[in-house]
Length: 423
Image (spheres, rainbow, N blue to C red):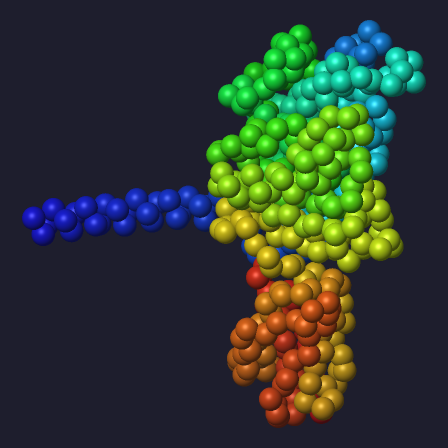
């Protein structure tokens, strides 16, 4: 009996070792070194425009659908995660170019980012849409985004032009684009769908649609939701992908809670969706902007710029953990950015201050100090920033005169090595 139990234990340990080895191998293949997907490692990037599909428009013409693909320049990885982004505009306006800034934000961290077209309701010719017309317009956007995801998987399986990891594609967007991304991630045939919507799905070509690239999957690993909503909370159920959200409580276009939107549709915004996600076990992170509206929370110099910085920090952490398989996904940690300045140097008053590019509230930070021989002479643990600060003052603990190197270490790994002098 003891020999049998020992064999069972050894077999279990062997299987665990295989799983851990496979996870580490997958992380290494994606460049999960603790810096990529956190830091702006790729200041330069390329932009390519390609046709990913085509379909019938509201005016009866068959038009092409384009995407702008951003790739980190100088990147040598054979497989990269991708983020597909859809613009806002109420499904009646907007262009893919409005997503370029967000695409550039994440391509610098090592993602391949994609800004897509999708079909729009022609309000200038057909007039203001009622609910009967708005449902198929929203479904068309969902189907087009799914076709763009399929295009990336088709490319990965054939020409491999963009070197996409087909298992790490994330959908994202702002406003109508966020609604589109949420539908791509959450809506499927098993959900409770009203009869009029099911009829529209059937006439539009089903859940997948017919905008191109059939035969490839359209599921996504996660969702980046910026001021989005869904018609029913119940569309979020166990097994749906994790998501990270940003929303203002005073949004009068897409509700934060449960309220009608601009088209008089009642919907469940990010506040309700976050609560539903936690209830059914979907990892979710929400940054709420108290008093924030629909557009002002995104202004770079507006009243809510600090909250936007918090969101981008949390989204960066959340997506990195999603791609690299790090748990837990839910986190209140904030990424603190890169080191901007180290001063005074030479050190004065037995202290050295590190300025970071982003403010933080609770980001843990440790330091290692080595001498000119490479010997570890000091290590600090458990240091934290004060609320709203973007600097950290390190106590040098009476280091003897000499040349030293400091290594700040955050949750995402070592942030660099910095030479300083103690006079």
